[in-house]
Image 1 (cartoon, rainbow, N blue to C red):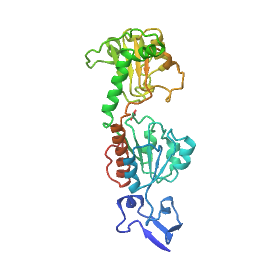
Image 2: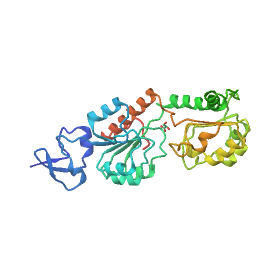
Image 3: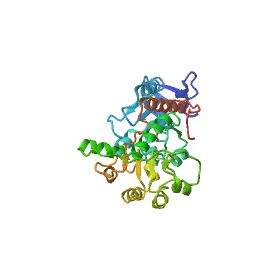
Image 4: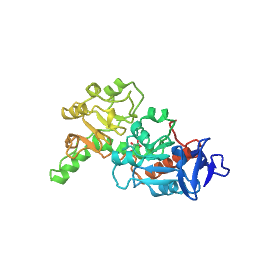
Length: 320
Ligand code: DGY
């Protein structure tokens, strides 16, 4: 039996950061046999920090880098991890690698346990994370701004043009033999104005705002009532910024000309949802950042955020 204190010389930065000043690991050969705190269950000779990854299809180079330094557990199916599986398997981890589809709240953080040091979300949006709950537990929060800007801008333009030229409607006509002539509008210049002026005067209104208490359903019945009948509304941020029933009504009644949505509520949108039936609404399945380059950059940044936090170093992109 040997006793190893946290002051053990030569411990790697990650291992060192895992150990509190008073930490003592009690072990026999390579097997931990006794401990008085969760952190003491670590076998310093072999144990790496544990990270739970909520999807199996994260770009491989990012997973390879994470695995070099961490003991990685991954949800096995290419769909969001079920809540009960997540809560069960996050127990005892040092880091969580998650996506926008995973709600990170007090329940998850408590299920993980007090040793949890970092949550790295592979997204620029963080509305799925209870930031207060993360901060109050002194957990670091990494995210991925900038690296997806070009990809999401392209998607925004795709839905904007698809909506304004009613491309989806034209394609439906082509496919069904009702070949017609799609109506369309043209892009104009832009300038900074207040919200009401924006709604009243714009031909194209593009929502790219983060979802916060201030922006929740900011595009509501009142906002749509201010818009011009030829207005094209585009949303590539979060469905929660829109009062969706009011949007549907505005589209049905011709209060606005068309909408292009990469995001909506809920996601995924149920098959046959009213939004998908509106001829003047171009809907995409939240593919804003879905280019190989952007997703690779996001995954690598998330891994680097997690590794930096585990090393006790500044994270490349963090919110705390
Ligand atoms: C993000 O990262 O927040 C985007 O919505 C993903 O497409």
